[in-house]
Image (cartoon, rainbow, N blue to C red; front, side, top):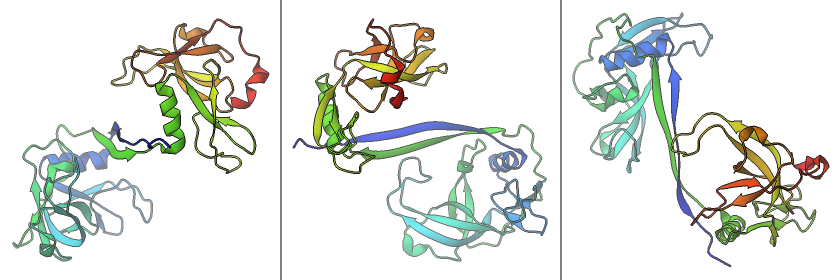
Length: 313
């Protein structure tokens, strides 16, 4: 049996969101070294602030400043900081109830070791040198043995308020495709498309999954399919993806390769986007050194009859 493949994989995208008046004031306040909460109708102060009371669902707009000092309510030690975390040296994740608040704020605590952290520890905000209106304007918390700081009674009104943020999301992990997809990828490197047949229902799955999703039995019988296939359904892409050198508009389609009982997806090229249609017969186009088809182009054959692929739409 060939060695099962594995490779590092990163999923990353920037999440852009607009801010309402409460979150806008909170983040703008951090930029100005002010921590704001929101007061509920029963007198509680929530930090971080929210737009609606989590208990009563009342709309909340009464902003109130709290102190940059507080008390650790619970914590967990992080011995190996990861990329993008607040500190590059070991630190504690802490929930801090700031003086004047009734809820706790999650952030990092810069401490020399786990023995120096405890529930009830007094801490204060360490502000970032450069602040832009984000939670990272609080660089971290640090231990503090002085008196509680006194908030200045800020109203929550700011000039040049922050109205939106971009929050990058990133997930780094090692992906292993397993035995079935390893075989599939090895065949693609030879410009062949190989699936697996279920020994019970005899359907051929491409790409293979190692087991039949209908019968629940293992699939090991290799079946070479294609290379040609039929467009079963498609969409026209009009928004250009970052770092993808393909001009819009272009077509992405589900393609049922000849001999397969599961449609795979691929880009359609060699034809104007508005001439792509269900039933179009296509064949893969490979580029030099590629491990998978760059796109699929029309074969020039007559369109497939709908009855031949309707179960794969």
